[in-house]
Length: 212
Image (cartoon, rainbow, N blue to C red; front, side, top):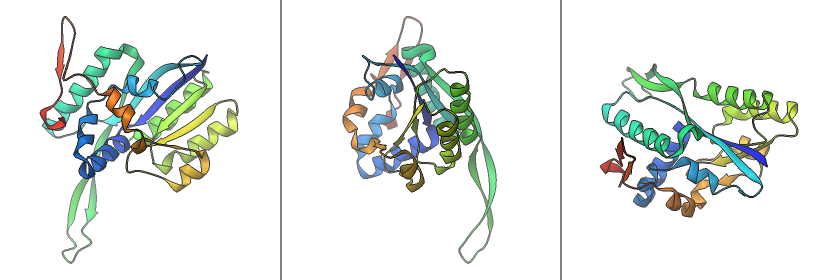
């Protein structure tokens, strides 16, 4: 059995879904996603085994966003146990100069550590021989050096890139062609939406109202 690990660039994936939902509001429902069930639909379960889904993101600063993210991750952990892993970076304020005539300085939040965490995790999993097939969900070309290193040092490992909805990268496409465009796989999103209530005998997690 070939061992498969999915590595989600959470910031890239979420913002792709967000952009798609502005075009088609139906896509807002897919925020409430069972990531393991979603990943399993892309592999041949007769010949491949999903080892884990690793979701890389950062904790938001807005209270509502924190609550929604926590519910999503907790529901996934309840359904999938250790097969679903969350690796968190952080947000950091960055000074941005207004390009309009005011030229004022304002602060914008920038996600930190995620890119490095994804690259490090993929390389460590290869070094420890924990994976045969890497599935990277991102359109961030910052991952190009890590993919090049894996291809060079571990030629027996396969790397595939899946572009989030409304996201793409020419550099990644040239390196990992063919890629999978998740925006063209709505049926797999539909099949992976969790129930409004995800529960066991102890805990219950509810889909946020704004995600319906």
